Length: 243
Image (cartoon, rainbow, N blue to C red; front, side, top):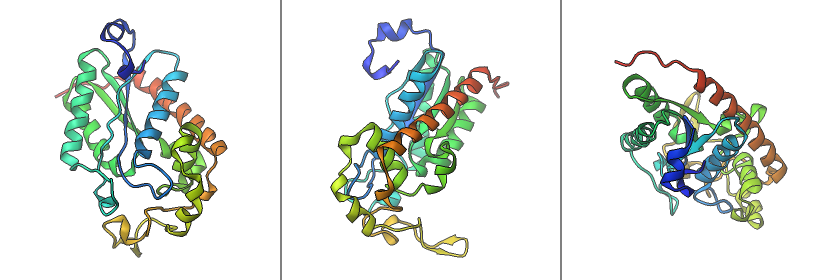
């Protein structure tokens, strides 16, 4: 059930006990992919997982602004502080739990959100009347996970499969030429760069020319299956005593 598209009466009659909360970002993704790439990808994975799952699952509206100040030099990028982001996610999970959807998987599409989501879901489990876990889709695609960059082959492929009209395919060559092959500016194990414009001219990391709709279909299949496996575990999980 896509909560954004339902009436409150239909939501009230739902037998769902679990919910998916897509979380993304509004940030640069090179000259070829939209600012909302992370949100669109998170929504696509959440919707695919809900469609495949054998029990009803609520899909909440996406959180479209995340922790993305590292892209601040590129026009259109929006960001929030970690504390604001954590509080917002916690409030949304609490809202879902108040209606009985108290087991929530946060489906994440942005690397910059990972640390904050780990912290806030642990806080929810320890202190709130809900159980929440984070799920980052590009960590759940097998051997392809090692190819994750930024606006590179993975994110672009998923878009080309799920939202093909959003990708400027005529700009893939320029995206690759102005990009970087690695995230950061490293000395040993230390990244000297704070913002992404320090190591990529146009915001791209990786080669989006290696993307395809066929790869995107595989990525969606793998991540949706992994999400369904996680939902099984969450459904059976006993979170233990609260404080």
